[in-house]
Length: 296
Length: 333
Image (cartoon, rainbow over all chains, first blue to last red):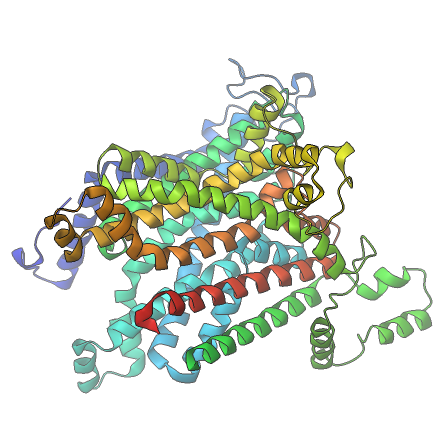
């Protein structure tokens, strides 16, 4: 997996440079077999979630008590659960919740971490010390336990689970952005920009923050697997979405009661979680190798 | 010395922040702690009296001060569920978590370090790829699901391991709890039946958590080793004719022991606290299960006490890691 030497090609404009860069990233990712597998899994997952109502053979919440806990077969490919609901349809419905959680966390948490970290690294001194001590406090909690305590305080529910996961997830991003900022801050081009009269805000927003992005993206893509697992864990403990909505972790918790005789009810959502997490892990590792070879 | 002091100050600040966060979380709970004590048929005078007794009519800052004073005296409040002191509850539940996490970390270290060294030595060949698969699986499969499936297979179907819990029910309270660690207490009492039963119960959850620990430790060992193997002194050692075994296991591994100590401590910390889900699945009476159990019945003193203890342990282990670094690496002294 080799990228073209940077000197070999001179882009005509900054837009062209950016497009070429993106194309190079995509090509390098496609050349890496496991990253490609990750991309395929994630893409399929997104498609399945988007088309869930079309793909699902049954209404995910339609009960058929005559068909309780039916084994996998022609009518119900993955069997039915304790209320006679189709497990496959519920898996598809659950993929929407999982992806919604991933998307919301991926959009908000790295941005918050970037803001805090850049500010701390750029300002230094007391601002840095205060912000980093706050980050340390949140890092001192194990993620799941902090999320648990927060959900307990706010009451169960998807939006509360999201807030809890976000609050537990931001500090590593802030630390990363701070470290990057402190390294970039000392570079010559920043001094040059400052000499030519750029304001601190301009330096931070236009010169420093964009350079922090690649490592944050890598971290985020690796982190999403953990987010899926945390969300599923909260669901398993009964702190996620409210029933009867289908969520993978909650489905496992429900299937647990019938596990000895009807194992498929608990097995299927576990496989779904594992495959989704694997997809994000593979994609994340691929992105890390391409965008940030130092972390390899 | 100065470095030690600043480390200590940092830890104290973090601990203070931890207190503040748990205090604030407990305050936003949508249940009325006074009502929980007096019941909803109490007169308004009784309500006001109890409220004043609990100090809830004072300013928030004063309440926080009271909270910190209480904690400083080792008082974590009373559990609404068990009616016992939270501190006593935690002292009873914590050893179970400690036992599980210790055995799991040992499994992770004993298997993970050699696996990582071999993967680095056979970089990009099949042992390396195999290890990557093993650890990717560990990073991707939800621990509670793997636990359930393991129970299904090894307990229900094959009968190799014992079921949920720490002991067979008829062996409860047979040996006097001295350390709270059943393996240690059983050996001290010379009771082989208890030790065996404890081992049979420990096997599955420890193997599952140990597997996650192995996934992490082996990957870290591998990347640390790869860094070393590219350095000049390794080439020198090889050039002067040392055997590959010696180069690998003495020279290279010796130089990654310091960062590995950090990795191991972090893995241990993660297990101490991250075993919430595993403990739920295996009905393991540890701190994680104590927190989740209290949480579902909105017993906030217990939840916050447990969270605080877990956070404090984490801070302590991190402090240990930073201290270890200075001790073990002469360059940092």
